[in-house]
Length: 168
Image (cartoon, rainbow, N blue to C red; front, side):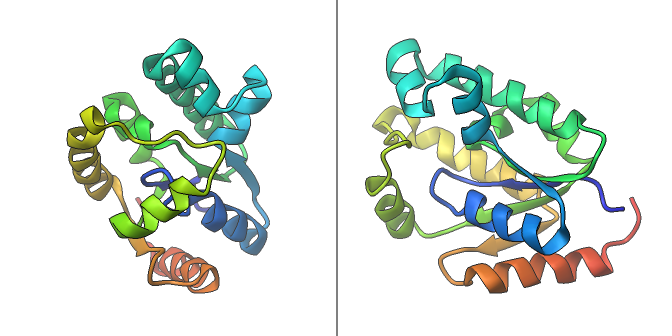
């Protein structure tokens, strides 16, 4: 069986939507970092960032990522964007099938502005986005633009890639 399917990308890029579709299509458990943090703390990521700071939120996001990929049963994991900043996470991604979901800045901004559980990106974080994109690209086995592909098309692209994936 293919290892964990991990979906990475910026906030609002469609990780959860694709993850749910992939879990349904593959019969795997779905693990969403936002849901895991909310379950663990009783707060959204936005609430944690505002009350405790972004670094505390990012630490929690790494913890739930490692919990997800440590599970013995392969699953679909929608990882928080911040986890890509950590070298240990990038090493762990090599043992998964990693899908980077992207979308244009306009689409991301639209999705973020209509969400109550996501926080807005501050100007001082914009430089980090470019570095994250480089890390997402370097870690990804597949890249999907969710601004161009429907959910069904994105799921089909991942399934097709899994069918031709060479053993690691």
